[in-house]
Amino acid sequence: MTVKMKILALTLLFALVLISVSCGSGGDSGDTAKGSDTDTTSEENRFDPSAGTEKEVAATTGTSAPVGDMGEQRAWFPAVVLDDGRVLVAGGKSPKWAAGAADTAEVYNPNSNVWEWTEAMTDARFQNAMAKLPDGRVIVAGGRSIENRAIDTAEIWDPETGLWTPTLPMNQAHETMPMVSLGDGRVMVIGGADDTYAPVTTVEVYDPATNGWVEIDQMSEKRIWHTATLLSDGRILVTGGGKPDGPWIKTAEIFDPESGLWSSAGEMSVSRSQHTATLLKDGRVLVVGGRGKRMTAEIYDPSNNTWVSKSDLNIPRAEHIAELLPDGRVIVAGGTGSRDNLEIYDPSTNSWAIVGDMLMGRYRFNSALLNDGRILLIGGQALDGILAATEAFSLDIGEEIEATILNVDPSAAAEATPIPTATPVPTPTPDVQQTVDLQFQPTIDHDGSSNFHVATEIPVRMGLKQKMNSPTGINGIIVQFTELIEDNRLTGGTATVRLELFTPAGPLGGAAMTLESGQTKPTYKKFGKYSVGLLSLEPDPVTIAEDAKVTVVVFLSSLLR
Image (tube, rainbow, N blue to C red):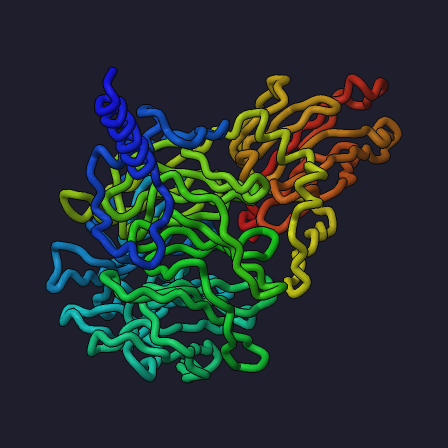
């Protein structure tokens, strides 16, 4: 080979290396990334597990199934989970209505998988905000009207009557803004755009006692498409914002209800708009994605007012959804360009993993974590138009993940960042033991597995040391029969057993539950959202502890009302 040929070969090899490095770069391009978020098929395949993903798919997987379609096509609408487990949606952009604004509202029933109409709102609106009040009612505020301009109206929906009642108007029109429920029962609307389409710094608080709105201290920056997160200590974190085509905002700020003032929360690593911010179980906040093909994620720590970058997503996302799972992980789905997959972030390992696909790609949609553990994915925008379609994604956590829930990893606990400013959530104190007159499903026998799941209201007959998860291991209560304390029913006394109770967040502790001689109604104890009932102890009386079997049921505490 001649010298010229060798030089030519080396030059070609170097060029190929440069091309390979350039094509393989999947990181966030920083504040200069302001191109279109509609990606080509070949680019998306680079992140497809079937095409050889760059990141390992998690042990956790899931599947999506269709549920009943909404009566209305909706995008840019709010959703809230009601106290009884149903889901309310109101307004949104729909092709059926002038300027896209819909006045309709409907409720999803997870038991029947059916959407039902409720009374229409007084005003049509999309890009509106919604929040649940302490008494279970729901307030809707602002949004764009049928004239395609921001409005200052608000109204409250009562789940008991299904009717809307207007509040006094806000002091300024707001659209595309977040709404946060404060710990004292009031509700705060933060920023957004006014009826001239201009972003604002205005912040208003609704007080149910007066049915009116009051302006409070303004933010330091005008924000639209930003996030607002209620922290564990009662303060409110606001991040990013900016119109979809830019410029986007890098700063964050915090509102303190005690002082009534805003203060700086520093800067994120990149500017963000149309991103998500999720409160983690340890009090920190995970911020994900945003316009400009953001693949980055970072965590804000309120204890020291700092930001720390975390592992990148598998694909860039904006206009996506994020839900905190009961086990402390965060699932995100969809995004601009009609993304169809879902991925989970695990704070204990700082890793993202794709866990499955939706039935259809969507963005500008909404979601809800249902009581049975499913994730409801609602409406939104697809490549061919606005959707009425709804699907429910179910996670299969498997025994390996179940063991992680029940057995705390000491090393992971040691790495957790303490949050001095956060208010710890107390372990629920059980109510005084009572009996209940409820009709449950027929009793089933435990199958002997270590990962036994059953829906609520289905009693389970199980032996010593066996455990049941109801409704699922990531959303509900885990009950284990650990001890027969005594059985004096033969002489007209009581029998007492010990049950150990867990949630995905950790142990609830033990509960001693008793049955009277001849008792026909179940004994129950209430543990917050769920209650545990003891129906029977067999045989009667128990003479050998190892032969004892209890029949236990988990049901929603709301059934006791």
